Image (cartoon, rainbow, N blue to C red; front, side):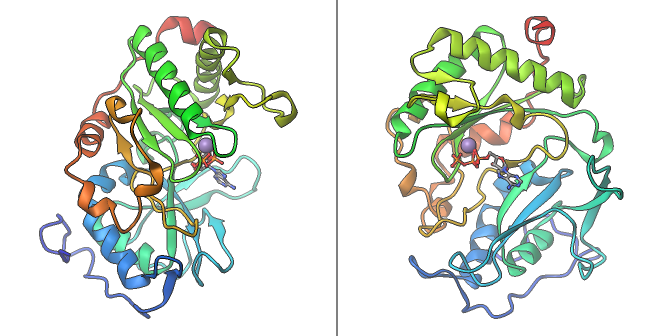
Length: 304
Ligand code: ATP
Ligand code: MN
């Protein structure tokens, strides 16, 4: 796999990052080592970085691999090299601001991989306007083992977004379900976005109340697919980035799709092993454009 050159890194600001303890097993089941993980990140960097750049990063770290302890980490480690960018974001609960890592380039991505950051989650904001989100996310959570239901709901969500004139993309989560993402113009704050997302999920749930619920309590779901609009809002409302691996035993990856693939996709085939060979599929090309295609939220959602 390619090393630093050709990925737009600047040797002036960041060095080539070598892998320490390269043979350490991070995903023992498929035998993926730290070297494999950093190679994977290097292979997907050109596709993944556009979705990481400028955004506060939340890391899922697993220093001893997926069978060991895992934790979400928001604050940049104090020992991060000076060339790793950060952004200060006011924390609603804590007294002090949190300095998040911003993964702007390949050396940072490799450094994070070497630090056993296995999952990469991003806030829906960019550093120059952290109070103005630019991503609306519909998190489609099917009942356990019912990926077909997630697909059906994703198709419905795409239909509703189309009716509203909103441009979107769909990706697997690497977990149980799917994410539909709508890049938006930075005109509303987190609260307005959360209300708009709630109005949107209500429209979807109204069309197919037998299939979809926006009721949070599990007891009320009755086998239906959960759409939780509260995932939207401020900088802390994260989404797993496209191409991020997940800390599940099989090393699944959150992978961009095009809607036409929804009926035939098997997410268990999308892993750290397979995804570098799938970058010429239509989803990755579509998502490279999508990040530039910002919709304006319609009045119908903002007034709802
Ligand atoms: P799945 O398809 O299995 O639901 P998911 O990534 O959508 O996978 P969710 O639990 O639905 O997982 O969470 C949605 C998003 O919320 C995640 O992508 C993640 O960015 C964020 N999230 C979930 N749990 C946490 C957490 N403990 N701390 C920070 N962010 C979280
Ligand atoms: Mn989910």
